[in-house]
Image (cartoon, rainbow, N blue to C red; front, side, top):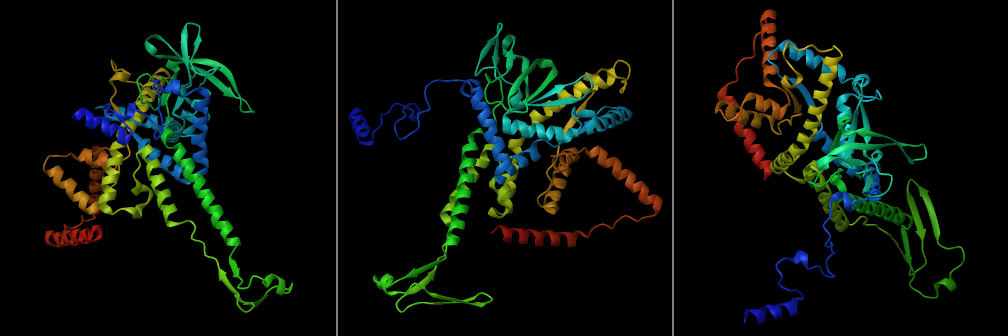
Length: 471
């Protein structure tokens, strides 16, 4: 009986009970194929260049896409360096050297970018192109290599001697990156082979989504088509709105033989100045002024939905794009979820910063710029690259909540400073001590304590106001 029911349902609805719809493509659904391939195999050298140029074109010409990339970089690439040795003098020496090295002339081979901007642009290139490379130089500087300069001579995988080369990356034992095929750009836009750079002399910063992947793939890959569609639709809507302004007057004629009876002088149009116009029509005729409703409400809603979907490629919530779209609670929850999604991306950037720090510390020691205590090595130096914090949404309310968590032993002062300001509470405590000592020296009285009853009334009034705004 059950088999008969299944057969009848299959004939009625046009599908078979095989367990997964994904393995039964039909004419109503795009066939994704049955050949399982890695990202490097699916994305040829030509396809990689096309995707890179599409992403760069969006960044150049579509403000929403450019904003989304900049906003992503704001949350992922902003770090501050802190040395955490027990010796304060050593901490100050290393941090002072890091500030000196971070100047454009000291860290950038081209002398254009400070280290903070170098990392910011590297993250931007990783987001748009899929990956970026920073080459170590003997003089302690970094030379940025954009991803399109690492490429094969042909298209796809190729053999170089007894080694496999994928998109300009020569693979060694165990599939490790052995060297990179570096090319230079000519003035005509073509690429000319320069040399192979050992992987030990290059920092690679990339987005990965599979274990077999050699080159990075941009997270914008799934949204590039959507962004281009919205850009084209917006341009067409703008053109349509402009065209509608050329045809602002519609004249209706009641008699079909009017064309034969009227004279060649047409209607009498008189301008009385200051925008006052009189149109003298014949009896039975009427004139209507056309009103364009471009773009329509439906078009605006569809465009908004398309942008909301496209922004998800970078995990960006719509509330960051349109601050008026949500209330306080929804916006705060969305931002918290977005910051959570940034943690893995921040760890990638922090790993890159740690590798660069280990390399430059060894350079400083070799050049005599840094002297460590006897028996201490670079691997013994503790340091931390601290991501920029996210300030409170509602400072008064959230600060009170943090104070209660600290008093209850559920959170430390250092955690609060890291989350909100991206620094160390110990440094804040030292500065507070210096301020208090200076105020005592100058005879400045401390601020009087806040009356608890008045403060409680202010809290209740503020909470009531926030509840009204949320409703």
